[in-house]
Amino acid sequence: MSQVSRRNMKFRKVYTALALGAASTLALGIPGAAFSAPTAAPGGPSVALSEYKGVEAALPTHYAEPKPGAVKSFTIGFMNPSGGNQNLQAVQDAAQAETKRLGGRFIAKNDNVDINTQLNNFKQLLVQGADAILLYPLDPKALGPAIKQAKEKGVVVIGYDVTNQASDALPEGYVSQVMQGRDWQAWSMAKAMASAKPGGQIGLIGFAVPVPGIEYLVQRVKYWSEQMGLKVVGRQDNREDSAAGGKVAATALLGANPQLAGIIAYNDPSAAGAAAAARIAGRHISIVGMNGDDFGVQGVKKGTITATFQNDAVGQGVQGVIGAYDVLAGIKVPKAIVRPPSAAITASTVKGVKSWSQQLAELERSGD
Image 1 (cartoon, rainbow, N blue to C red):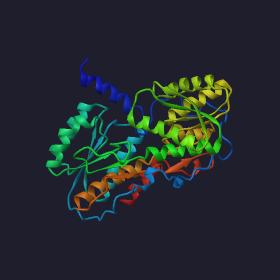
Image 2: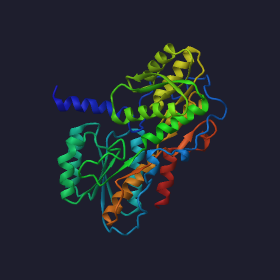
Image 3: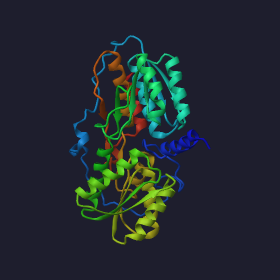
């Protein structure tokens, strides 16, 4: 197998791993439907996302408000690393709606979690006359020469989660990046667990493939949990990036720690698997996930997941386009903005949280 083929296989795992908040196959059936034992106290924990004071709190959360008509004609190219995946599709749809609102043309490409495909898509967008390209870089090094070419042609390149920390230098050619706020997410998850199980012993579920973004998230979850008085007693990794894999990881954590009070999982499918493991073991623990996709929402409604947090997919899509438009209009933009979780989803808030599809419908109506 060639080196490129091995790298492509790795990145397929990475991006089907919900590194970007996407939904994966739930091997245990309909999210939340198979579980009945509640793990959360009535009302659930209270988490005010605005109370976060970590390093990402100093970042701007949006680009300058665009002035419709400032750019007479423009084309946005959007490169979806994994077409059809729930969260990424919401980002793409929001970017398309915002492009339409501002009077531009929108071209979408599916990279199919393949480095070569992404590189070819990027080159195609340059040929098709894209004035700006939005992308999640699968391999920054492989894209380097193409991005340099885009810069020479005056094409604006804005990335999503190019670096884990805003203090890290952007690779050459990127004008800016939109971050989903991994540290903000980690703080939120730890805060929910500390509220539900103050001082308790907890376990962490990470992903077996060492995806930099997920690794950083889990490390920050451990940091914030300990800062809030929780005792992190173990970590197990999901080897399948599915609810079934989360169940295996949680079973190991439960077996090794009879006093375990809770589990924080890197995504909602893993949290759903942890709920199944706890039910089978007859253990009542708190479980916290991340993404706010169907897995998490249904788990909170059923009482099997204590809390999750909605990734701001729509805001990420909109802001990516606004950042590109601002640059085309001659407006200076920051090197990074952050779109942290847009909602804490608990038993007391779940009914009031708007889904990505509802947010998209409102966005599209606003552009009519």
